[in-house]
Image (tube, rainbow, N blue to C red):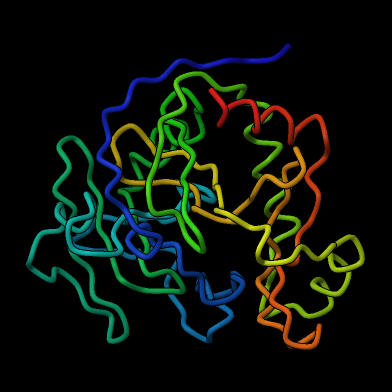
Length: 261
């Protein structure tokens, strides 16, 4: 059975791609010693003990912390005092009533990593796994989202399906083999036929976490296409093109209908 949700805008979304912690510097891998390593070579602990309390990461799943820039809700909630320094990463408390969180600008995301006290971990995990605790949007721009529009009603199954499609078809600078496989299904569109990009994302109602504002999509000949990358002309005699992947038709038509309302 399809599920629907009605949401009301209550989170400020004057957020750029960078301010959402969206810049990812490689894949992640958890090592046996409890360290999370990133494709860039940076590392962050999975857990940390501070003043007798153990703080754990990972409660927000694949979401990104909104701590990337000054003015972000997370950045504004960070306390100034550094309460712990492990020699590589510095930790500060997050001023969020009822929540025992610490944060570090560690790892492979501009938004860093948030840790919660171990006695709150399951409650926090369940909260951020519940789609009813989010607001849903589409962003419009050229290369990145420059403005956001609230989606008041959305089919959650289709939203998750599009998220999965994007994750499986996004350009990955660290995985050339995957890129070549995806390119087998790609087509090239002249840049002159590309007007603006669209992305679909969700933000937790408390504003601290969100999904990525990528990949970008666009509508071409009444079909929704995923932007794999922009080609400046290196592969086609200087003609600029957009390399794109077709979104499955039923799924694409649903989201074209959403942005047409």
